[in-house]
Amino acid sequence: MIIRPQYMNTLKTYRDVPLVKILAGIRRCGKSTILDMLRNDLLKSGIAADHIISMRYTSEDFDDGMTDKAMYQGIKEQMTDDGRYYLLLDEVQEIDGWEKAVNSLLENANTDIYVTDSNSKLMSSEISTYLTGRYISIPVYTLSFAEYLDFKKSDSRSPKELLNEYLRLGGFPIVALGSFDERSAYQIVEGIYNSVITNDITKRHNIMNFDLFNRVVKYIVENVGKTFSANAIAKFLKSEGRSLSVEAVYNYLNWLEKAFVIYRCQRYDLQGKSVLKTQEKFYLADASLKYCIMGFNPKSIAAMLENIVYFELRRRGYEVYIGKNETKEIDFVAVQRDERIYVQVCRRLPEESDREVANLLEIKDHYPKYVVTLDELAAGNINGKRFIIDRIADPQLL
Image (tube, rainbow, N blue to C red):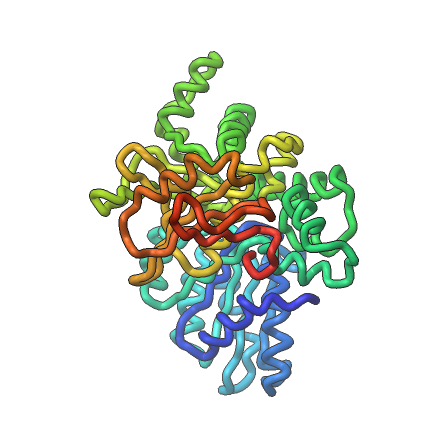
């Protein structure tokens, strides 16, 4: 088991704090393993094994349609004294009303509760009713490049070679732990994707026209890193002779987002200092999701670099936006409290640098400005202006 210290440090920060800790992310991104790591850490810190209750709600041990009351009783029966119990509850979204059971355990028992969720309902009325102000959401992503290098410590290849593999195969831990060729890796990811689509979207929301839904997904995947709207998708489908309302497209986008397949990135107007509600971008939970659906294409590397940087900023706790500066676009404006950074992403400098650098040069404030590139020869001084040039192949960056 390879430790992912970022998540373990976060869980230690919130240990014994009277909040439900919700680890939320796409299936197979490593949430269950993080709970296993947490269990081992609790044991090492002196917690008795019989005071750590681990439950996995995708197990065949549980009946379909288990109620929240049955969930509550099943856990309570294992609590045999008044001591403190640590509850590690995996894939709770399989239980309708799990929020009620968890809230009762938080209120009526001496517990510290950790749950994982592969289908976010954090904005739903159920969460608002039962857990308002009583939970902390901890997003879990597939592996960063730094984590990927940890997983490949025994590999003799250089960071640059491993970066090329990471760009092609993505960061699902199950893929990183093996030595798979491209075809096998994409088959594994396709299985994960199909599980998400089947269990977390089509069944849950009773989607009847699966072909049309898949066409919407394909459109999103083809346009990662580009701005578009639900209306644009509806018009595109109409041009293909298909009919789908804008409202239905909104629903599809929302369901994909709640299943952590896609992540929404809004635009930020640097002049008006406001978040815009139109022409958003969407990024994929992992680059390999694009390749398992569309096949690998070297021309998509630029968009996937942008995808990687977006999630690296999210991992570091930033709120991430697309920057709009009059008619110019900044790839990312990342905000964390009173800190702000601007980031442009490109494969190579200087050949492809005109737009990236020129757009940054027009921002007249003191906040740091980054160009992130694969180019090992890129300079940090452009047009007399000093830029921070980060090379993605540097393990210190990702």
